[in-house]
Length: 307
Image (cartoon, rainbow, N blue to C red; front, side):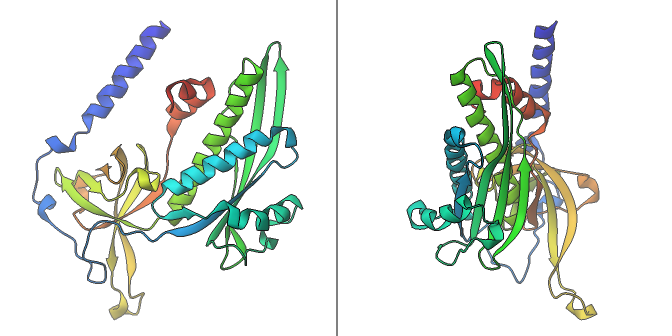
């Protein structure tokens, strides 16, 4: 019965993926339209300027799990470097300046960033960790705290406390692998939230099916994945009525269905009622991993298949 259920789920997922095929959609009248923003660059692809980020992790009260903190640090640097709009600064030039302040228990707001060549600082730590032996296996729960600090204002501008899905570990070695996996999931989720908040806007490069499908100028380089929610908008000039000279006018929402390194295809919500066309702006609303990803992580299947 379980085997049939899993096969059925796999077929359903396959059919759902096949249902969205923008290349087979006709090019309609809407798809030939182009939005032009007179105050924007002529090119419709996204041009990013990189912000420099320093990363510092702490084991907190769990010094025996320093390896997990090192993994968390490595995953954070890797994920942030993978975004086209962030650059992780040289660790040797800034780690000593931050490490002592973090180790002393100073609040993030009090950390002196004057000597750090970075625009932002990420401080991450193991906030809580419990490991419970159950026979020859181990159950555990872990929580990671993150702070995103602006060097310009010396203020914490974002905090997150994340508890990733966990599974039972069958041995000490398996426990170590599961803890590292938890650190990776937490780092990925935090970086996705950062990407939503700080990514520069993208543009629509092409539409098909009278605006039902839109190809946009961002992809994995923005942390975008299947299921990511986006918003399409135009820039309007309100200066003639005493408003902001340039303001956003939301025109539609959509969900990423296919993603590549630097582009993605989005299924536009209610395309018959909206006017998504080449050139309009796109911003990420939220990153969604969904129930499937949580299931894979909590069962360990994600590790097995490298997801």
